[in-house]
Length: 170
Image 1 (spheres, rainbow, N blue to C red):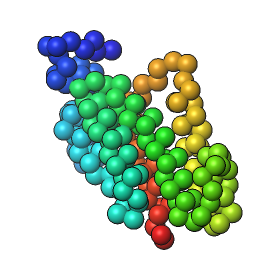
Image 2 (spheres, one colour):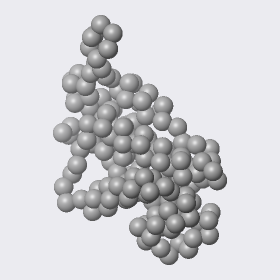
Image 3 (cartoon, rainbow, N blue to C red):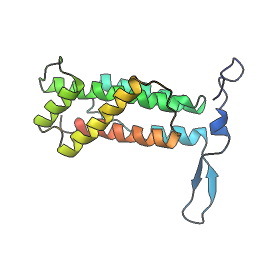
């Protein structure tokens, strides 16, 4: 892992700079290195709906910002995703508040209430339950978890889509 110093903190993380992450073009099979700019573009392509409350949108941007700086310090890809798992709870609670569901409920109970009000299908509820479990595991982790950027960004996109869907018919 990169050991941060005054001299290297603005340098691309050696793992990203190593060229280990590549994109294979299906036409022709060419291989191209994924750069810090590529990871940033992928993260910036994930949009949060204007229907999502500003407080949640702001928290998503903080998580995204941490992930973007993962190109400088690789563990930030995972740390930003872990933050997004916590933001998911804020999103569920914001939706519950819009519906008049009391705020003294656990995250588990809030998801059950949203399901009972048909804001989540059974499939949606299962997906949100997985997000909640990831939130619990990463918040109370015993050891550091470091994901590949593509995996972290893919999960970021999945959680962002779930948040957007929750506020689709607000």
